[in-house]
View 1 (cartoon, rainbow, N blue to C red):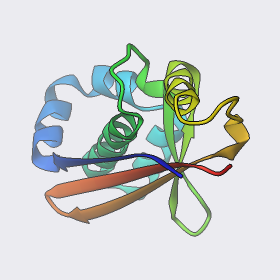
View 2 (cartoon, rainbow, N blue to C red):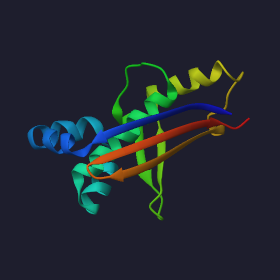
View 3 (cartoon, rainbow, N blue to C red):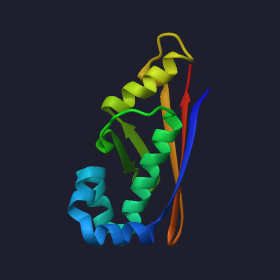
Length: 135
């Protein structure tokens, strides 16, 4: 069952301008150390930052609730083949499970699948997130 779908679009030129003025603070607030290392290694850091931001926004939209959370509660990783995946922790995971409780009695976190996909045509980056519950 599909729990939620979210999407976001980011202009990496705006991100690059913001990073010129506030890189250390913005990176510390939005990205985990693993995300920073991955995108610094690949180059085009502003584009990578835009992808992470778009992906995390898409996840929040897929959950569909407004909560106070840390951006670090959503982590974007990559498999060896380069495909992205999402790991959700803390308050974001609690909000997701609260949403699922409304749909499924006694949900199991092991049955939640979060899918993420990027598209980029510089300067634009988009991300789509689909969250499903497998009963």
